[in-house]
Length: 283
Image (spheres, rainbow, N blue to C red):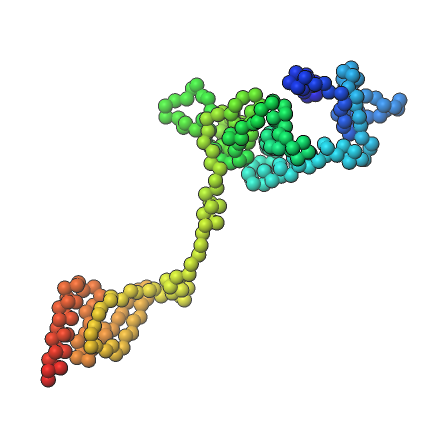
């Protein structure tokens, strides 16, 4: 990998790598043998290119503080991304690439600049950034697609391609588990979580009646305006199976109309009650 990175740096920035600092891992330093230091392939390559190799002492990672701090930042980001997305753990590599992609496009405190701007000489665009692990409907390229075939595939966004403009998706229920395309619709809002946050519970009278017992219900009585009348007694018993109600009695022993009578009967009743009241008053 370093053999690819070295000529890219020299060509893009017109600079040369002079020093490489690392720990004493086997991939960089190789192990000691009976004759002493036995350099590995990477150490030999640095010698051939005239690059100085600097190593930390055994058990002292703090001597390579820049690399260790960057590793901690990336691991914290990966842990948060994996926890929020709830995707399989084997996608941690895709999360690592995406975290590094984002860090290269935001200002860095140490230099107060954007790494992408230093490398390419222009400011990056952030309009294409998406929430890692969000659901999406992607349309991959399929030359054998028929007219009645589904147009999109349900998948999850997992990163950005290195050399093309588009997105990478993980499709757990499709033949191609990983696809790259620029034609996709992202679903970055969780409707279930939004519904839970906006949900408010208000206790109503009907809820209180229901809580008293499974056999009780609420009944709405008709609104009747009576003048010069007096109600003696109202007893209402309501159950799931039967409903009984004793009519209210007036002073003149005239029963009230039932709930299901129409408005014409009610008007006729009120007129009769008014006439009887006038007769009683005259007498």
